Each structure stands twice: as C-alpha cells, then as structure tokens.
Amino acid sequence: QFLYFIGDSSNVGMATKAPALREFLAERLQTAPRGSAESAARCAALVDVVAAIAKGAAEAAVALRTTLVQKVQTTNEFGDDVLTADLVADKRIAASLEGCSHVAAYASEEHPELTAVRRGASSSSSSQGDANVFTVTYDPLDGSSIIDTNFTVGAIFAVWNGATCVGQAVRDIAASVVA
Image (cartoon, rainbow, N blue to C red; front, side, top):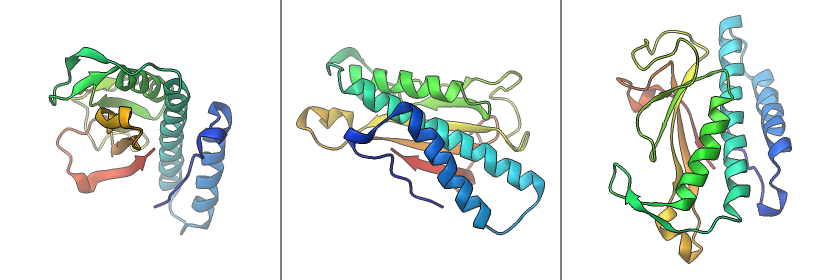
C-alpha cells in the first residue's frame, strides 16, 4: 500500500508526474520482500497502470481549470446530472488508460459499459488470464454536483485483476487510487 501526492495546483505537470510516481513505486518495490519473476512483472505492470491513472488525473486537472461547468441536459445511468466537467475529466482519464499496455478494459460512471482497450481482451475473458493486465473502474469527478460551491472534488479508481471486473468481489481489487 502507498500514498502518493501529485502536488498542489501550482505544481501539476503532465510530463513530470507519471515518471516521479514510477520512481516512487519502484523504490518501494525494491525494499519489498522478494518474490518470483512473475510477481515482479505483475508489480511493474500495476505500477504502469497507476502511473497512467495519475497522468490522466493530472491532465484532467489542467483541462478543468479552463472548463465552463454546465449541465449537458442529460443524466448518467445512476441518475446524476452530467456536467461538462464530468465529460472533460472522463475523456482525459480514458485517453490515458487507453495508452497503457497493461489496461485491458475500463468503465466509468459516465460510460459504465466495459470498454476493451487491448487487442484480444474482452469482457468475457477470464479474470484469471494474463496476470499482467488489469481492468480499471472509476468515477472521473466524484462530487461534481457540488463543484460550483468550490468544495473539493476528486476521482476515485479501482484496479481489478484481469480483463474484466465482472464476477469479482471488492476483496479482489489489486489497487485503489484517489486523485
């Protein structure tokens, strides 16, 4: 387990945050008990996924600074009003996840159907398949309904083992991230 702070709003940089996170996690992995080569590869893959999440969240934060927050005349499948800020954050995070070779699929509050992003991955694949792929589920902007009051909002992520989260229990989550 770890806690990593991306930084305050004056210190957000898209190019520098993911490498810093990778270095931080690599240091922690070096001090962890030694396992097999497979577990080292799995840890490295998980580091890449968390770094992609951090990159997407940082890019979303930068984009949201200039986004006019408005309702987009629709609700999501959970009954919440969808705001322009939700869509901007979701787009940036999804793009970052799609760029990570260890992300097999993702789903968000704004797009709850699993989206496969890795060739050969599908929602019907076994969750016990390739040990170095993960599925990410997330709320791109939790608390967006109170954004106009200047209260804190953030993104919440769950990283699941395998090409799908369907049929898995919460205890099966490989990592969770709050940004």
